Figure 1 (cartoon, rainbow, N blue to C red):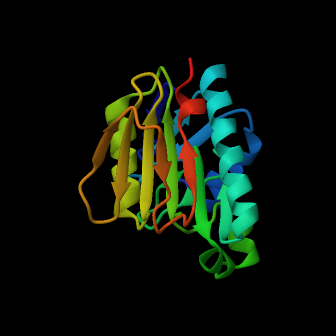
Figure 2: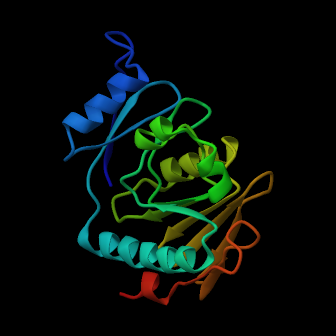
Length: 193
């Protein structure tokens, strides 16, 4: 996805409520906001990436319905991270007790919580370095496990809290480890051409 970053600070500094209303009034545009308060406008994904995202979210949804351990979120969900950035991972998951600790009002808008797990799926037009920086931002903001999947190169980067990034070339599956107990993502569907 091509992203455009706009620095509004010389003119206006959006409050959380103003940013939320901007997103609500422009539902056809995907916005994020980085820790500096800059507005990031992202284009929609292409059909192949959108299909792979859907397949992945189905796997997470089935696992989560069976385990009832937390909440699964799609790429339309924005989270307010501890560093004040508003981010929307392609797939994210939050442990049930952490989700339950939020108020109804916090759950309704952009929840002020870092997910326990995030997944970013690289689209043909994504900037790998910027996506890697975004993954590191997640780790710096209390995310426990993250997967960066590049379906074209069949390369996966695994991000774990407090550890070096692990790079896998063409793995067949990924384990949710102790963050997503019992979850295994079969990558055949993701990597198929």
